[in-house]
Length: 452
Image (cartoon, rainbow, N blue to C red):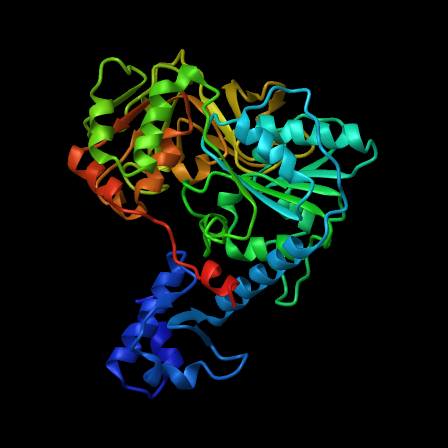
């Protein structure tokens, strides 16, 4: 309905049904995270809406955008090119005291000789380990180097423990607030070396603000797992960077965690669209850490707080809100309740996503804190899969009710890779197969526009 109303408001007295349908589709796709929509036949009918730099709709080679998304994509391309073309302020051969495998060594050799470097890798491939090696190598060469490690979430931003670097969330570092003027300019990030982790969670608007804030000559590492769920807001930018041939990039593909063999093998099958292999693995007794069970009628009640339910939804019968309330009401009284911090709380050094245990009117995080003093927290028996990104849990139960097929295979991949010890997928086989057939990768035009 909102898409139809948007089209009617924009087109006013124009009664062309095909044009109304396309503009409504453009709005719908934008809400679903796409930056643009391809249509090779609509140009004649929509030409009056794409004239000038302030037109409501922008056009590029049969791709149509809402103006704000076109401007964001333009900004991202401009600033990536600027950083890529700038001469690095460093010129040295880094040496790492830490043992590195081949791809990590290649990343180390490229990191300080390029303005920008992309590093991708799934769970257990040593991204955080590599980040530490990069930091130590630079400080060994230049003791007073200014280094920033940042990410979109507090838990990820403070993942590395190092006394000689600056850390913080992107939102705090850039000075972002809930309500900002249209002409808002982010705070500049004046550092020699910047590592940005969990880049798959960064949408187009945040990427534009981040890149525009970094001065030319800064060495920038963009790091993450491009196979995870796209950001909540429009623009799945990070994977698109890997389609730009000129940008230096490294893919970490060697598993450093042999204790998660079943989980990592399952993630690989999901990522590579090997649907039959997924079902075979889930039924294989040689991999007891992964299995498929029927979707229960009610949320399963964990036997202890080491088990976390992950669900696609916040609302509804299998949404995280209902699951948390149901489990809390039906668990054994002796089982302690897990809690999750839902907003960074700097006075107690607690980050969004940190997990603790409720003990009476206190929370253990592990420091003991009176619950009324905490900024924001929630029950953590069940967490939405989007919310779980950047976190890990010992045992995971993934609830996949019918209707979540629209999220695609990235939903399952993200959920599976949150597990440290075991993962149980609770779903009907048909629902699981339908999810695996879909992808939620939103459309953008970064790679094509980079060439022009």
